[in-house]
Length: 97
Image 1 (cartoon, one colour):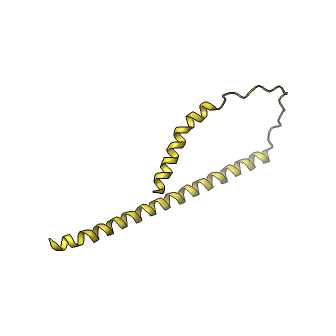
Image 2: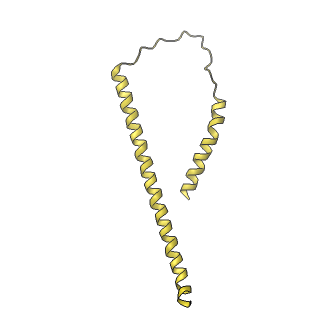
Image 3: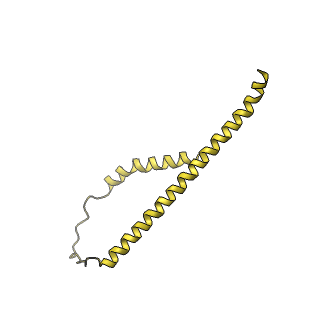
C-alpha cells in the first residue's frame, strides 16, 4: 500500500515539475542596485563543498538502499502470506479430490 502512495507521489512530482518550471521566471528581475562582486571561493571552501555534496549523496544512496531492501522484504512477506493462504484454502480441496 505504501508503495502505491510512494509511486503516486513520485508521479505527481514528475507531472508537476514542468508546470512549476513554467511558473518560475526565466530571468531574474533587473535590479537597480549595482551587482556585488564576489570573490572566488577559496580552495578550502570548494573542498568542503565537495565533501558535503559527497556525504549528502552517500546518505541519499544509503536511504534509497534501505528503502529498496524494506520494499523487497515486504514483497517477499506478501508473497509468503499469499502462498500460505493458497495452501490453506487448497488443502481441503486437494484432500477431497
